[in-house]
Structures are given as structure tokens and as C-alpha cells.
Amino acid sequence: GAVVSQHPSWVICKSGTSVKIECRSLDFQATTMFWYRQFPKQSLMLMATSNEGSKATYEQGVEKDKFLINHASLTLSTLTVTSAHPEDSSFYICSATIIAGERENEQFFGPGTRLTVL
Amino acid sequence: GENVEQHPSTLSVQEGDSAVIKCTYSDSASNYFPWYKQELGKGPQLIIDIRSNVGEKKDQRIAVTLNKTAKHFSLHITETQPEDSAVYFCAASRGNTGNQFYFGTGTSLTVIP
Image 1 (cartoon, rainbow over the protein chains, first blue to last red):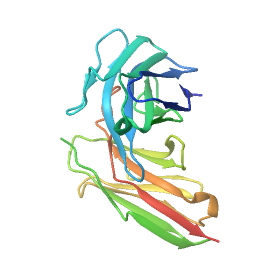
Image 2 (cartoon, one colour):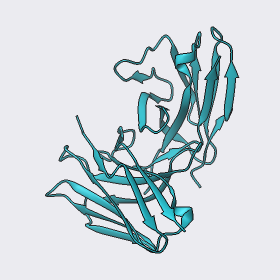
Image 3 (tube, one colour):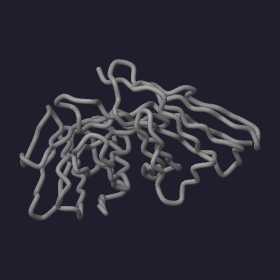
């Protein structure tokens, strides 16, 4: 149980285009979803925290107009990279926390999305 | 805010030997400490976690110890196997739903057959 999926698993796009990444909790309802960015051989960098039905909270230095987050339901959050540029190329990972129960402290991670901007 | 440090950054062990990875944290309010294994090109997978009301937890070849006074916790892998090779991350959290995780910088473990 507690499976998180991401789609697509990888995407290549041209500079200037927008890319949408979906994060779904498949078998549980998630109160909160997190979006991370990871550069090669580095740790996970939290970009934003989103709660269903409310605006995302962005970490310092993350442009909210560039990285649009929508958390429309308890099982789906999307990250849209707008006007992508080569420096946005990275591995994007989402995670979700469960609403209640003995596993409510845990974050369940998706498999990640590799974005390459040409 | 919380600051989590992780050592070593790289670790090579012979198959069958033990591996130990250590993390320290700064926020005394942190009470949930998970460990994640990340294979290349994949998302992190939880391998074991510990809450501040216990000092040690074990799951087969994997164990985690926590010293709240010293604010450090460690991952122990015994009888290592080549498939244990991966990057391992520790994290600390205040433990409430929706609370941010603070990650260590990762340890790249290589198990030599």
C-alpha cells in the first residue's frame, strides 16, 4: 500500500515550452504533497509543499510563477514548469503524506520524472 | 531550522561486511527519523524509520539507532550484499502530518562482491 506514481517518467522538451508533471497517490488520500528537485549526486531539495484546495507554499528561492503547483484533489498534484530552460533540467520527485493512521508521519515518494530541456 | 548532517559521503565495503552511516540533527523537536534508499534514476524508498520514543529498531539486516541526547542516529546494514549498493539518505522531521523532512546529503554505498 501507499503507492505514489508520477507521469511522465521522463520528458524532453524544447526551451520555452511548458511541461506538466503529475503526481498521484494510488491507494490512499494524501493531505499534503511535496515537490522536490534533485541534481546529480545531490540530496533532495524541497521546492514546495501543497495541500489540497489551497495554494502551495514555496521554499525560498523557488519561483512560484515558474513552477506552478496545483493540488486539485486528495490524490493528485501537478507541477508545471513554465517556459522551461536548460537550467530547469533535473530530476523532479513528489511525495505524499497519508491523512491519518499509524503511517501518518511518513512521506511516500514517487519514482521521479527526469526533465531534459534542450 | 533543522540541519541534518550525514557521514560518510561515500562508503565501500566487501560483501558480507557491515556498513554504518551516521547522521546528526540540530532541532530537538524533531521526533521522526526515516532512512531512504535511492537507486539510480529512481525515487527514494523508505527502508526503516525510528521515532523518538525508542532507541533502536531492527528489520532483518537493517537496524537504526537513535541517541536523542546527542542528537544523532545511525543506519546499520549487516551482511551486506551487492544489491545494497545505492545512495542512502537520512531525514529528520517533527513528525506531524505535512511537516517538512530535512534530508542529509546522502551516502553512496558500494558493496564489492
